[in-house]
Image (cartoon, rainbow, N blue to C red):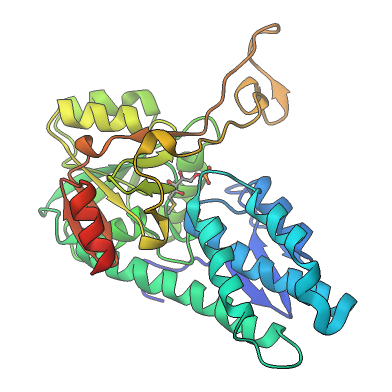
Length: 347
Ligand code: MRU
């Protein structure tokens, strides 16, 4: 690992899946151990692990856990008893397409298994998916960094770093790479309400890796742009539709509108595992709505007025026309549209 890349949120250790518990950061650095597929499903649903690529990698290892359980129970008949596990896993969170992608990848391996214990071969494939994600992030880091003129600051939203991926990060990978190359001087991070991925996770990662970071309230972004403080907004994605519309953390859309108004460039960084060519446009992407308590409470204590309810969609869709560049490991698509996305995916 290089100087600006020291964190890994997911690892396979002593025959189990070990995850950094992101709910505890930055106050405590704790891990949880998943020994069964049910543990991994709960970890994804409860946001122990979050971020689209990290959810995908976790689900690849979760498939290994499921197969191990069913092989112990049913021996060579395990494939006849695995579907309920895979179904429950695929429903853990709806928006990040990487979840379904990773399950499909692992399922494809089922057909190629030799006789005997399927676990070693499937584990090897899950580890390959993990490594390929890190490799893709490093490639995207280089490609995205090259778009940034020197001596500037950038704004990012949510957490797209090592915690949200196999390692290095998507948008945060570009930021790591650009900082290392001397292209950016520092980072503004939206605190990212209500779950505070920005202030709890992005700020923690950047501090760990000694990259200067200033937090802003999400609602300060337009004013920051007005001051001429940033040249790019750089974000990740949970799902990219075939026409280049991007679902990402709630607040991304309003940031993109502000960026266009202030002539600040807007970059989306995501591996091709986040592109869903089966969905023609963003309006068809399923958007997760989470519990109202995430808005009404803080640290399990109610602070919103008694009697009020809350609506808590946790993603939104930014139309392709507001995006200047989509960076994947296959290349950079400027001013994305259906034709350019299709060309990039088939390259
Ligand atoms: O609800 P979360 O924390 O899983 O949402 C994460 C995001 O929206 C990220 O921006 C996205 O998954 C890209 S992470 C590389």
